[in-house]
Amino acid sequence: MAWIYSVSVECGDDESAARACAEHLSLPEVEVDAQQSSEDGAWWAVAVPEVPESAAARTAAGLRLFERLRQTPPPFRFALAGVEAFEAISFDLLDADLGANPTFAERYHGLVVSDEIRERLGSPAGLEPFAPGYSWFPYRGE
Image (cartoon, rainbow, N blue to C red; front, top):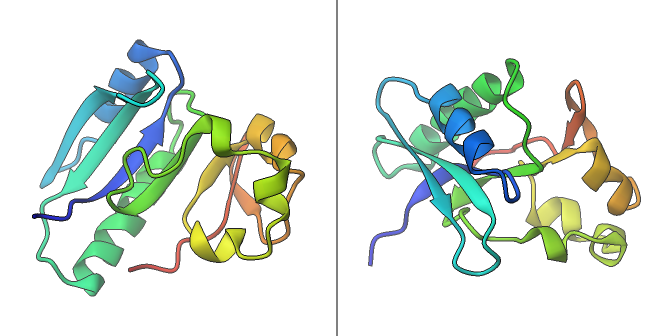
């Protein structure tokens, strides 16, 4: 079974935002698509860089995609990088209990959240500014 590394961006029920976000993340050697979750119906922009299966290559690609995401992205609720990041966490699971868990930042480094979700999480320690309207647990790589 192949494990797919991606930067996946959740856009709620807004298909057009997911498509715009996928287009925004379109870079050379990055495959992008808008996909609907079979779990909760949310729309995601999924960016899969075509890189060697090494931690260093994946990390570099992830950082490049995060930098692109900082640059006036279409609205989204949250984003995450990693192997099998698409549907790794749902909007419904992002709540104050999870945000209060001391291992949350460690498990979800690279998680970018909108201000609405940051407040829903209870503004957990470790979140830093990412872009206007967004915060993140800085991505440490693969």
